[in-house]
Image (spheres, rainbow, N blue to C red):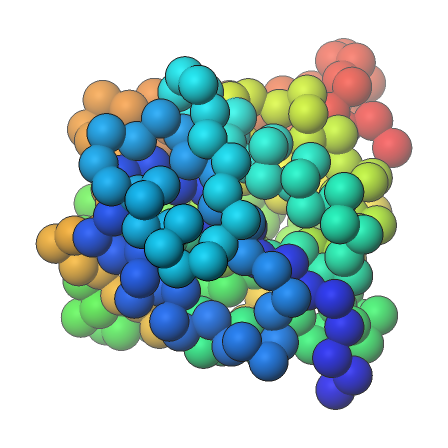
Length: 246
């Protein structure tokens, strides 16, 4: 595989306990630069990122998960990469597999690649995924696959790779600043006819890893379902959307 200009972006919030381990697993021969955007952490995330030699941008106030990603992609695109990888710095995703994740994009077979944690139920649960998260993931995935006409094993991965074409086609700057950002991105990419693929990755949940708290999680779940509902009425011609419009 030709080694191209690959940028990793990390939307970070209080990732001090897991950041170094995550960065250590990133293949140095593959990745040109790692950009960390800190969303007003209250721990030592920024200091550790700077010590590790990452390119660091700090928000003066907390914008939320989606707002963080917007800064990630704006800064990455300035560097004219070929592929941009979004990797959570919480060590839940195996960064040693990044080459497998981006190969289909470099081969021009896909525009967006997802790292799927759901190969089997047993593997997901043994890997530490909480049961309630697993079951919501499965319910949402079944609904989203049916509505979007796709057949992914997961829609909620925090490990994603994007071609530059994808980041310039999908209007991510119009998306939510909250956790529903990823669902908006996947649905909008599907609506615009971009090719999306996935590769299996191990499930890794640790005590130090980030996790959505109960009420934000409820809001995220309802918001994800709401985006699917908006897509349905958009396809029926009832709702005009700047997000989904091809």
